Image (cartoon, rainbow, N blue to C red):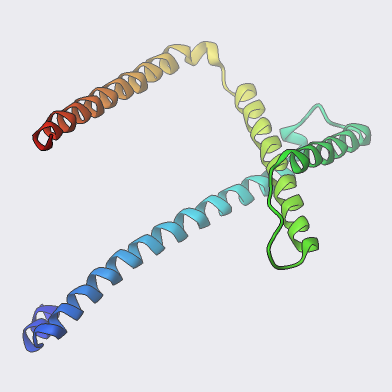
Length: 172
C-alpha cells in the first residue's frame, strides 16, 4: 500500500527507477542472503563437528588410548596433507606474498584431512551405535523409496527434455 502510493506520485522515469531498484534489491538481497546463509551454515557445521570430535576424541576413537597412536595419526595427517599439497595443481599468484599463499594452501589441505578423519569417525560411531540387522528392512524400504523418486524425477526430466526438443523443430 505504501509502495503503491509512492509509485502513483512519481513520474514515468522515477517509476522505472523505483521498479528496477525494488527488483534489484529483492534479487540481490535474496542471492546475498542465500549465499551468506549457506556458507555460514556449512562452515559453522563443519567447525562445530570438528570441535565436538576433538572434545570427545576418546569416545570417537576408543581404540586410540596411548600416545604412540596419537603421534602416528598426527604424522599421518602431515603426510597426507603434504601429498595433497604437492599433487594439487595450483597457479602461482600474480601478486601478493608467496609465503601467505603457501600458508593458505597448506592450511586448506590440513583442514581437508581433518574433515576426512571427522567423516571416518562419524561413520565409525554410526556403525557402532546402530544395529543394522534390526533396522535393515526399514533402511531397505527407504532406499527403495529414494530410488523410486529418483526414477520418477528422471522420467519427468526426460519427458521435459523430449518436449523441448520436439518444440525446437518449429524453428528448424
